[in-house]
Amino acid sequence: MRIEQSVEDYLEAIHIISQTESQVHQVDVARRLNVSQPAVTKAIRKLKELGYVITEGMHIYLTDAGKVRAESVYEKHKVLRRFLVTLGVGGEFAERDACMIEHIISDETYDAIKKFLNEEEKN
Ligand SMILES: [Zn+2]
View 1: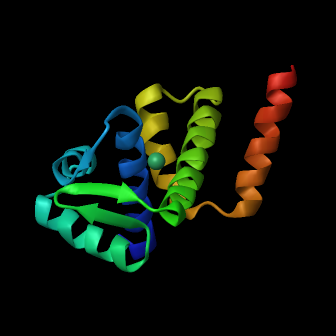
View 2: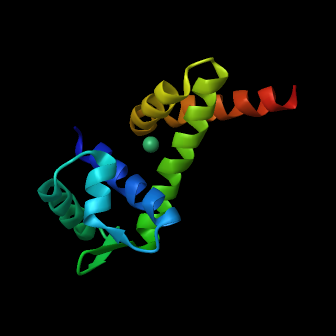
């Protein structure tokens, strides 16, 4: 897995968990991403170096920069999922594939998809 992709996956996971839980714990992140606790510890260290998170004990918080990056990934995720569902892709596959495409899609293609969905909604 590319470093960038894993950084974005972790930020997205922390962001999603923080929408429903008051505190984000390492164990929640490990469960959500289906990775080991040591893997989370390592990733969190990297995210801290990048200035995207701060930690207090076992709790993880996104910094402002972390929030901006996480929201942009999650936004892409939602748009791509909607696009795939529009194409007739089943919910589970749309969810999973959106989560992979979000990391590698070019701005060009992403903008075209957004435009397509906007047109679609007008009809
Ligand atoms: Zn995603």
